[in-house]
Image (cartoon, rainbow, N blue to C red; front, side, top):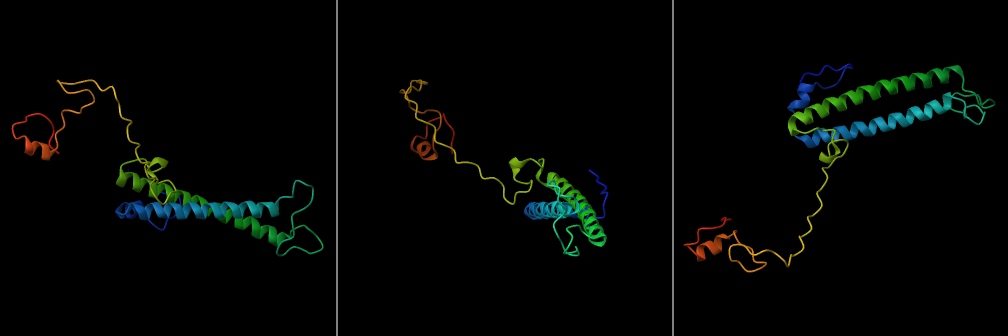
Length: 173
């Protein structure tokens, strides 16, 4: 599958495909997702300063704001606005890189890398399966081929096979 990124990326899909350790790719996805969360939080905080609060008061004083006035000066507003835009561009580049990494993982692992069942979507470790509970004993097992009730037949261990060399039924484990 060919993929053409919209943004300049530090790595190509071909380079990602060449990485044969899925754990490295999974860890990179987790790192990028963490970075995106921090950038989104930063944007929320910057927007809170840029937009007047719902209580009717202006934004809280920030660096570059006049101490007598709660309003941000134009230079600070422009700086905050530029920072929000830069963060949004960085988020888009990182989301695209995550898509590229997931494509490479899908090819390597053979599963949908976004499926959380496989522990690849933002998880650093695959989920561990729960231990299987032993089946409760059944007291009413039907008798098969003349066997006693509840007796298991048809499977013979290798030691039992050696003890009975003429037995011709069962599986040899």
